[in-house]
Amino acid sequence: ILMNTKEILKKIKNNTISTDELKEFSKDKQVIIAAVKKNGKNLKFADKQLKADKEVVLEAMKNDIDSLKLADKKIIKWFESLSLWSRDQLLGLNKGKDPFGD
Image (cartoon, rainbow, N blue to C red; front, side, top):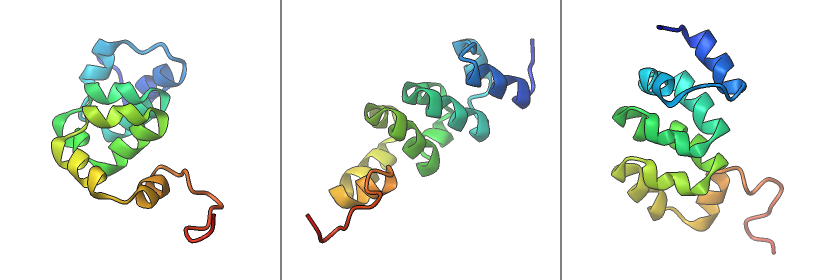
């Protein structure tokens, strides 16, 4: 059964989405972002292009840092090239921290 984005987003919110349904929406950025916010491992259902999308991958990593390994190789290289401070900034872990303080 084909569903619209609104129905899929509701299913993600309620944790009632199936992997098949997620795969159907693998190219839909809005759906994939919602899915990875719930569970970073859902990145594995994302389309190749979305696995190479920084916004999508960072949202997945905010939920589960290990989901980086499900991302496109270019994104992995990019993230690994960053300083720890930059990584924490991107993942929202530095709120209220002074980069030069202790």
